[in-house]
Image (cartoon, rainbow, N blue to C red; front, side, top):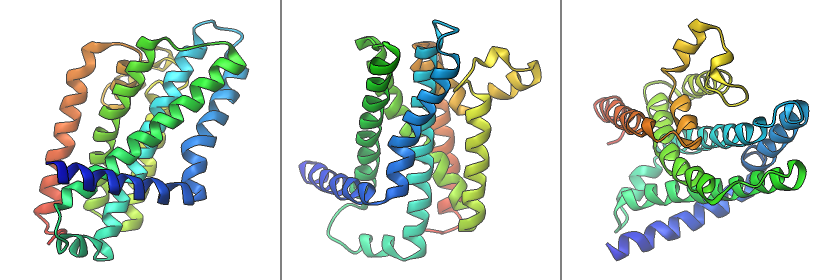
Length: 240
């Protein structure tokens, strides 16, 4: 067990170093969320007192979904295509320790992203999240990384690389505009509100906004995408 965590930490370190070397990943994980937060906060933050904390949690949820869906699922698919997984399986270590390290790397990156956006909220809009709010942000990050990582894996596994990424892009943009990232779901037309209730990001945002009743929805989403990933990814023998 100790060896497992040592390998996972080493893998997380290597993944984090590699992540910071990719300018595109750095931009969309840190610069873009801050930009979106400042943009929407400047437009509507002065008109509605509740909007800045609402927007902060929405941008955090958007960043969690984006980071997990695009940084894990497609990467593991690429590992398979390039036979990296076969190479890892021949090493004297548990391959799961490497994947656990990937998850840990994403959680650490999200922690930094949350810190940057929260600091921006304090400096520009004079809003400082409470310890309770910060704890929900971090727990939501852990649950969200698990949820959207398996969702990204599922979408990447049953199609070729380009179409898989297209599915991920489509679902991501549908979620950020219908799940309540930038405005309350209740302001949508009724039929779109019904659609929003079937999107996992909706329940993640409700949890981040301290609605603990949706925890079972999040656990259900995680289990659902784990099972779907198993049947599609393994039953089709993508991993040998």
